[in-house]
Amino acid sequence: MNGIQEQQMTQLYLPQTEDLMQLHTMLSQLQIALKDNEEVVEKLIRQADKYTLSDVMEEVEATKDSDSDEYLPSTGDSDALLDSQLSKNAFLRTQVAQQTKTNSETLQLVSEYRKGLGSCLDVVRQLAWEKTVRNINLHRDLQPGYFERNQQVDAMQVENAEIRREIELEVNLLRKLVREGC
Image: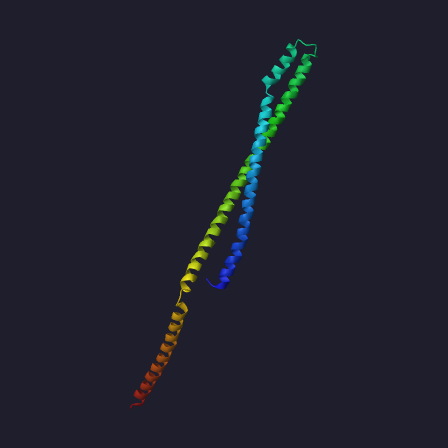
């Protein structure tokens, strides 16, 4: 890989590293939001469980059975109380359903971000592997004596080229002499 290719790989690698960090941050935030949402759902379920029909009926019966001089609700008042409690219950159940839907969407987003994070990690691993291989090759090439050996090889190649030229000149001279009939 030459310097230009390395620079291009570095330019590709850096934005992906930044994207990876952003994805990791978003994933952490989504996991925190999911935990908060689960706590809200549990709280809503506990509140909704308080307002079951039997609890409301017990409350109405308790006020009817009371021996005190307090106000005892009439049948209309107990129906209104029952309706109020049932509407609270329905409202809380609706909130639970909405929160469950939000949790489901959050889980889906977490899943998508994990997939994105996984593909970014694959790219980072590939780039790290390529850079490791390149560094190993550079290290091997920079071992002591590498440049001296290269200089000797270059000198031998120049010398061989000169010898080939001399041989070609002599062969051409001999061919010329043979053609002239010496």
